[in-house]
Structure formats: structure tokens, C-alpha cells
Image 1 (cartoon, rainbow, N blue to C red):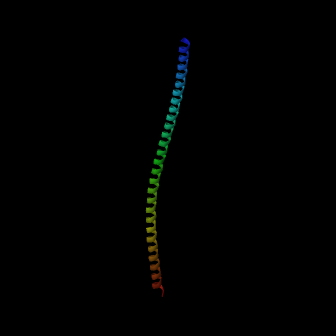
Image 2: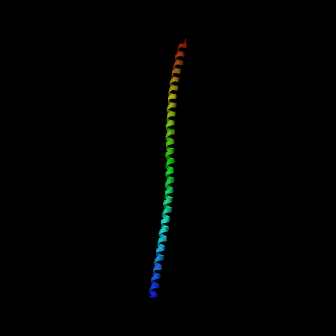
Length: 102
């Protein structure tokens, strides 16, 4: 009877140790998964921050582009005015030269 009891106890101990090892292994896997999840969350946050920076830079570039377009349009208007003024001045000079001819 004692031999059977000892065998049963040994069998229970072995079974319990196997369960403990499986539990420890599962806990380790859970910890590794949690670490991976945290690392991925961190990477996602970094990517979101980069995307925000890119979007802000894009907006700034669009604003700068619009400002530059406005400046270009103003310069082109000034150029047209200057060309028209020059043409007027050249006509007046020709007209005056024609009147000055004896």
C-alpha cells in the first residue's frame, strides 16, 4: 500500500512539475508578446509623430509656394507696367525727335 501511495505521490509531483514548467513557459511567452506589443506601440507612436511632422512640413511648403506665387505675380505685373512705361517713353522720344528734325 505504501509503495502505491509513494508511486502515486511521485506521479503527482512529476505531473505538478510539468504543469509548473508549462505555466512558466506560457508566462514567458506572454511577457515576450507584451514586450513586442509595447515595442510596436512605441514604433507606431514614432511613425505617427513623423507623419505629423511631414504633414506640417507639407502645409508650410504649400504656404511658401502660395506666397512665392503671389510674389511672382506681383513681379510679373511690375514687369508689364515697366515694359509699358518703357514703350511709352520710347514713343515719346521718337515723337520728340521727329518734331526736332528741321
